[in-house]
Length: 77
Image (cartoon, rainbow, N blue to C red; front, side):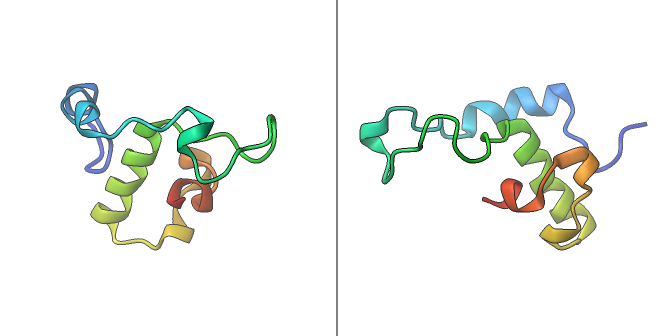
């Protein structure tokens, strides 16, 4: 049985088109990221599932399970 905060493939297929695409071109950014510098962006589905997790469980961002979502600060950002 799926947990109340897990995002199923069917649910994700309905939500994904509503999420704004990330800006990829450097000219649209406020800064230019150094190649290879910093953390890579989290996949949108992982971020969305983390948001649902926080909303459903009421936990704080810092209490997100790192083994499932990775760094809480990366997901929050």
